[in-house]
Image (cartoon, rainbow, N blue to C red; front, side, top):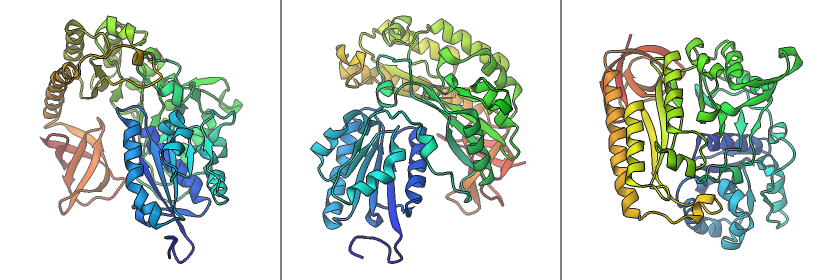
Length: 448
């Protein structure tokens, strides 16, 4: 048909997701919201009746990437005038109506706290309106989203339990695009988790901008009050069929003793923790408004490893933050040497408009690139050493999909390493594996 709609009347939705795991979760929920309106997800924009770009504002040149993708969609829009194009996520929240001004081909703009209104916004475009929803709504979007479908799905899933941020780090746009910290009620989280398990999920990763700041209201039947993340995890661990629990991203200031203890006491809580520090220099940490010192972070790491000695740590690092000296950078390298990270994400500082740090003069680009190269070399060395130390060990692996070679299957270990084996398996199989080899970003193994 000329408008691309399936002859049977099925409408097709293509979603491109940028950025973090929370955006992956949001894209799933938007697809479910539009599914209630008769849309099915397609893998290519050429087949779609609606294209939705779910954006992220954390990384460098986020807006430029959006407008570049919109430019590539322009010929498709011209060929299919009935095609609807929407921009969602954090860039949508930050730039709002400006997106329509720069790209009149866009039909709607919706922020990450308002996508429960997406079906009504799409309906409004039928009369020529171009709705923009970027105010922080007073209602809870999760109350207005459809129940999750009972169809089978992948064995691992994300579940957002907390959104927003009250930390206001000097480099970060999240408080401005996602709003204040809000935690979902305990009962809704538990119900969604049970529904996921009924659909075949065996591993759930709890999501939040500061997920360990979670404080969700519990119903009277569960004792009432506000639950922290540790108590929520303990309740989730009691769900039959849920075999693994993870959470991300955590903030050092919200890592309470009860959550540390949970790592040593709850077998289903996997021995992997993403705990960003950003810098090893107290002077830079203060300029970043992180509200902790390097020593406090190292003490926290000691306590966590005392509770779970085999825990693998991941972190985030920003190099060449405004004012960073060589001594500040060396302090970061020293912190990395002490902690020994299994994995890490590292970036050269780039200003985000509207953040306090954006008003400060940046270091020369060459300085940042040289420091980033040194930092990544050290992190890469640690990652390789840790993976090589896994050879000969037995680990649990949750298998998710076939590999590239005949008979090969790929899954994630307890420590979040990608592991591939040869064997007679199926998605969702949870097996013990002996690690036999280490490659750049994966481990080879054999079934025990």
